[in-house]
Image 1: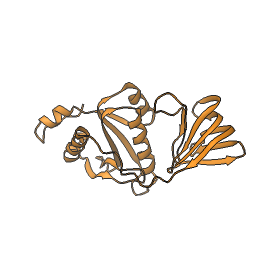
Image 2 (image 1 turned 60 degrees about the horizontal axis):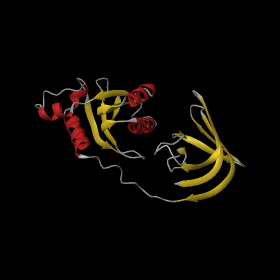
Image 3 (image 1 turned 90 degrees about the vertical axis):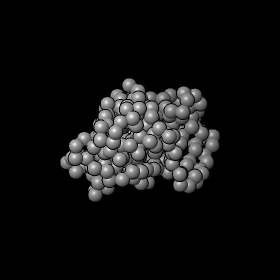
Image 4 (image 1 turned 120 degrees about the vertical axis):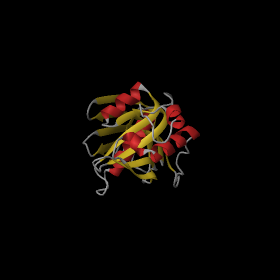
Length: 219
């Protein structure tokens, strides 16, 4: 991971345009190729970012980050205050709490909850950026990646988006679509998922764990 503290301005052009005026910021370049711009505030979310796959080109005073859709994140650097890099190694991944783990187990065991004719390919399907909770095949034989959360927020949608983009690079799996499953999905997450072409399902965990194995519901 590379961390750069710099006085910079940022311009994004793509489906919309956005501008950040000149100010000191943290530029984060991750090993997966993603580039994120942070301020010293606003909690954990970046001000702007570019998800992989994308390409970073560095010229004198200007970084250009582009993706396959032709969107560009242009960072104009006035002064670099610090530029450091760290090798973090392989991350063990997120260890889910008991509810999420049990939801994954229930849905994997009773995959027909998603629809008639659906089948399980694998739980914790490995990718270069972490395991997908469930990889399924629908009734038409097409692959579906499922990300399961107790509380569905924007971060989970971003996570599923990255998984789907990565899995679609594999010609043996493509086309792959995604389903975001959670006990509660925030409206912002629902909107973002729809915008990304992902399906959302609200899961009644109490109903699932309290029912017989052949009488399950997904709301």
